[in-house]
Amino acid sequence: MIELSVIRDLVTIFGVIAGFSYYVLTVRNAQKTRELTLKAQKQSADTRQAQLLMQIYSHLREDKFNTHYTGLFRYEWEDYDDYREKFGDDLEFRAMMNYVCSFFEGVGVLVYRKFLDPQLVDDLMSSYVFRVWEKIGPYIKEARIRRNRPELWDKFEYLYDETMKIYVQEHGHRFSSKPST
Image (cartoon, rainbow, N blue to C red; front, side, top):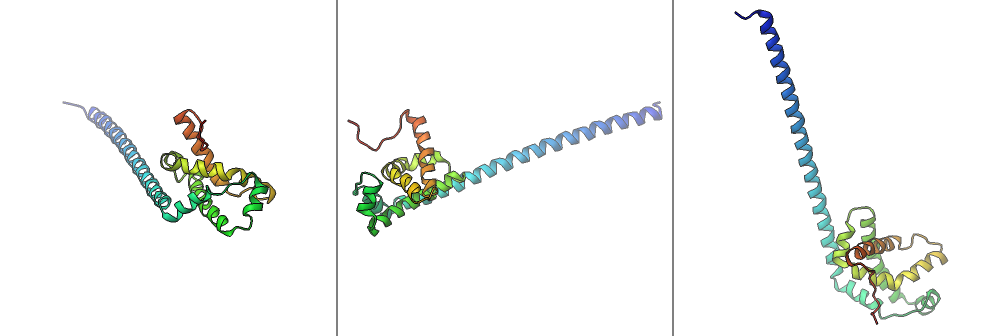
């Protein structure tokens, strides 16, 4: 017959094995739960980005945006002083410029705050960003200095820089809105 002390030892050993097995199963279950939660959070973030992108795309396709966007390219100026002389009092032109720049400033804030992946911006509208910034950017940079407004359209410039980095990585050269000769 088996002694009582052997039975006690066996019960203790099986209890330790059962406790350890329970601990391992609990840890594995917690790890799987964490992985599923992270996956769901990523899918939710991706869905939010897709929704933001579609709202941006919708605005980009509006007649008013396209009218103002194309309207900007009808105007020419040499430098900041020439711009101020020609268009400083032209409220129609300034409204056009503000409308377009405000749109890109807003998208820039979303990219800057990491609510929107700059790769999505590049995929959807990099040429819009590049053409407008290359047209208006030199004026904006000078206006920041002369008007003591360092924040003026700074997220638009950030958007331009981030989108250009991606464009260069993908194409091996900088975008240029000027026709090649």
